[in-house]
Image (cartoon, rainbow, N blue to C red):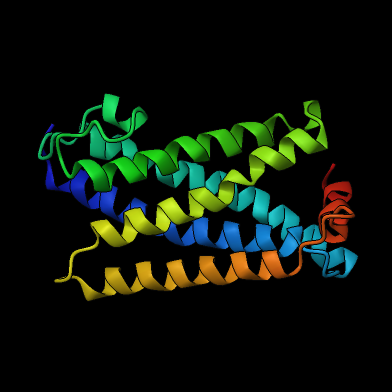
Length: 189
């Protein structure tokens, strides 16, 4: 199917999905540190993190499915799942596919969290750092220089995710679980 609307929907859902994923990543970094949040704030941030994650999944699904259905570019469903198999912008799209695969992994383990040990969930959830990097690289690589607003959104999101990762790593202590995450998890169980 070839329609300019598919391209516009794919592009718009990708950009909005980038902003939402950036917010989700930043909230996750805040929740995962040992810096304490007030109990009410931690619960609120954890809930927003969870709901925005669902929103991001919907947006990414719209982004990927409209790109795969649009016949203007040679993308196809296989390259949505298997990285670096696209006939269109192979490396750039491939990085996006890596991000999608990691998003599915992180989302699935989050959904299965009550059935997983904290250790397993935590180890797999750390893939969010690679996910954030892949999303940022995909967004910046796919942005066109004749669209400075989209490029600016990509740059701001990449910087925000980088700062969130630094915030998280500076607040990381190996000897105990994160107080903010524990409080937030109890609040939302």
